[in-house]
Each structure stands twice: as structure tokens, then as C-alpha cells.
Image (cartoon, rainbow over all chains, first blue to last red; front, side):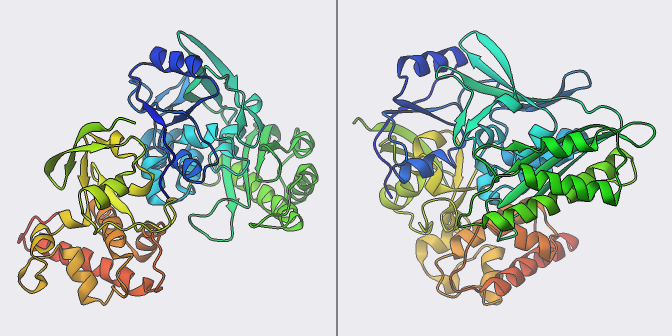
Length: 297
Length: 177
């Protein structure tokens, strides 16, 4: 379908882009890869007077790593870049797994991880691992910059904590503490391409005695935003990861999930899958944390 | 609304063209440049019929704004075998090895998905010259064939990869398939 008419803006600096956002508040939409925005335009889900691409703004691309600062994923880093980046594969391989689980090859060659985050879909593939790893979103407004903890970033379906004059410029993923492991688990009716019916990101940090020192579990597609499985997290702290504690953590995670029934899965099935995938994610993350397994992709 | 005059590099040729900012690359290729090899299926990035390469990367032309790809190299199915595209005389023209494999393996039924399938295959083989079956199927996951002729398409891609490997082993041809 032909797209609705809009004025197209191609700012070449962050300052210019933020000024345009300020000037055209309420009448402007941002696009990066466009794989979601163009579809929404085509469906007339949005009808902005102005469409602004951020693709010509310098310094928003690239993936960097430093031991102290961790991984920085630029706003324009493509899903495919995150999927294949040696830095990501070395320091946060589950981010690569999540990127690879997103949509199709073509979409991954166009779309960005930041776009997937900013669209704030509860089922987004790239969010649970970022929540598990306690990432921060760097938001710029002109010359000011602030970091938003990812736990505070999602306000509802399609709604984020970004202000009207702010552009998300980078994702910062902290370096994991020693003895940590992460996992991403997803289930969907089709094995490829599909939007997740349920997805889980988990981080487990074990102390030298094998007890759980830190744990973060993020559940996708089972609430209006990605949800933390706080009961399961609290239960696991100080405990060893055994079949029994994993089973109980899974049960508690399902209790914290509040899914709906839709075209992809029923509420009941989603609850059951939260239990299964949480157990699976924790087990895999704990395996990496204890160094007993390595990542085979 | 004013049209923007832009220069698109399509299959190696610079084409100066006036486009409306909300026109997709798919619309411009098909309706303005009259390169109708690139198809339009779903228009939402699900079916892959509109796949083209931009700077060698496979993308959905239905989700790409034409105005945004000025300065980039666009390759369409017509660019894989320029002679055949011009003469429409398949008997006497050299096709791209992937196209030949599609024909040899019967990987074409109604043909609507074929240009997209072949562009996705090209992207796969450019990056993974010796794919296994799982890699081929994963690489095609963004391309739908309503005739459901997937197995023959997978066979064709494996065949194209094998031909390329043999050519390289015999130092015959540096074809970049």
C-alpha cells in the first residue's frame, strides 16, 4: 500500500535532530531501519506530518567494548551487526542470539537493536537479555545526555521513558561480574521469523560455593511491558541451582506473569511456557556461570 | 509536495530521478525505473518477494524509502544477468550461476518468489560459500513460496554453492556467487 504523505527530514547532527523533535512535537516520528515504522505508516497506525530519519547522524553506529564501560551498542547498529559482531559474541553472546532470533535476514539487515527496544513491544526479541544484563539506554536531547536504567525504560506497549525531545543514542551493557551467565529462550508458533509467544532472558551470578549471588529474570510477551520475575529472583538468592530450585523458580515466574490470550498463544499456554522457559534459561545461565558449559551456536 | 531529484545507482548505472519522499524503493524500481523483476508481495517485510541488495546486503525494498538510498549501490534481479534482462532471450544469454541452478533443479514454479529467493541466495552465498542445509533454510526464512517449492529451492542453492566450489578448485572462474 502506498504510504501516507509526510515531509521527510534528514538531520546530520544530533543537535539538529533534537531541535526538529522539539519544533514538531506531536507531529513527528523517528525512523532508523524503518522495518516497524514503515509498516505502521503503511497501515495508517501513525500519520505524522514529519518523518525524521536518524541514519545520517554521525557517531550513532558501531559497537564498542571496554572492560570498565562494558559493551556499547550504537543506536544505528543493525540487528545483523549485533548478531555477527566479534565483540558481542565474546562479551555478550546472548545478545547475538536474541538478535538472530529477530524477524528475517532482510529485516536484520535493515533494522536496529535500538529500534526494537524503542518500539517497546512487550514481545521484542532483544529486550529480555538487555533487562537481564541490566543495560542502560543513553538518551540525548541536544547537548544534554542521560542514562535510563532499562528497568525504568518501558512504560507500556509502544511507550518508553524517552521524552518528546530525546533520541536514544546508545545501549550500554555492563561487563558481567565473575561467575555470571546469561540465557535467552524464546518460543513461537514458527521456529523462524515469528514474534515471540513468550521469551525469557535470565542472568545468574554464582558465588564460589555455587550459591546464587545475583539473578535477574525478564519475561517478554506476558504483560504490557517486559516483566521481572521478582518472586523467582528472591527465591533463588543464596540458594544452589538444583532441579528442585529451578522447578520452584519456574513456578514462581509463572505466578508473576500476566499474559493475555491472542493470536499467538493462549493465556494458559503462555503461563506454562513461562515456567518451562524460565527453568531452561536459568539452567543454561547457571551452566555458563559455573563454567561447566560453553556457548554453542 | 515537491519531488526530490536524486541519483540512484541501480545495477551499476547512475539514474537521476525525481521521487516523492514517501515512495518506497520498490515503487520507484517498478513504477518509475520499470525494473519489474523485483516483486511486491505483502508490503510489510514478511514475504521477501521484494528483496534487493543494497551495498551487498539483502533488504526488503518495500520497507526502504527510495530517498534514503541515494549514494548506495542497489542490485536487483536484473543486475545479476544484465544480458538476459535486456534481450529476454534466455537461450543465448549467460545467466548468473544461481539462476542456472534454479532452472536446473526445477526450483521455479509460478516464479513470483524467484527473484527474491535468488537475491536472498546471493546474499547467503556471498557470506557463506559452503552452507549446510540448515543454513540455507535459515537464510530463506524471510522468503515465502506460495507454491511451497522449498525443497527444490534448497537443492538449487546447494547446487550453486557446489558449482562455485568446483570452479574455484579448478581456478576456472572467479565468479562471485
